[in-house]
Image (cartoon, rainbow, N blue to C red; front, side, top):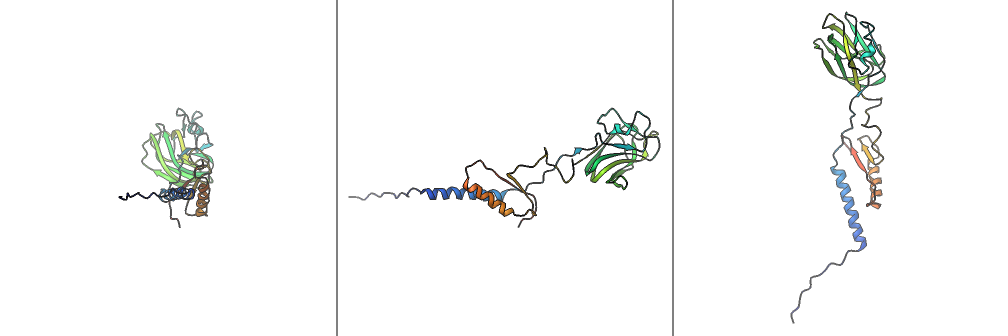
Length: 233
């Protein structure tokens, strides 16, 4: 009688081979994630208004209704104005040395045609962060860069017969000292690992997390690895 061919059937996989397959898939997925993870840019905080309500002094004031403090009170309807002569200045004390990034001058009609923005850490030695001889009034938004406790507008040439007059003198930068703050404050949590090329023990940390995940691959633990730009060995 004819012989009927019976296709061979592979034996069902053992529990050990199934487990190895799952672990292998997890290992492959983790390795692929680490290899393709794009380097994360360092978080940059938005500039913070540092000057409002801070101690402020000026070279002069026009009269009792225009004190220097009115330029940092956050009220666009009050102002500081100086005597009708050159030079004149207004200085704000931030209370501590910090990185500054921007100065905003909201001029009244009596504005400065020539002036400098100066920075100081001690109130005595000044460096020029910006200067102009062609000011046109209105609102001047000026990018600056440096570390300072004291910031002043030093007027060298008035645009009118009157003095220098500012509705607001605003200084922006980083809140606090010791580097940029993460938006919202605080760190990113214990399971977010941020590395740069100088971080010690990167491979050790990766191995440690791998061992945890290998034995709890379906658990709730989740880790994120963020690598700052740089060269890693």
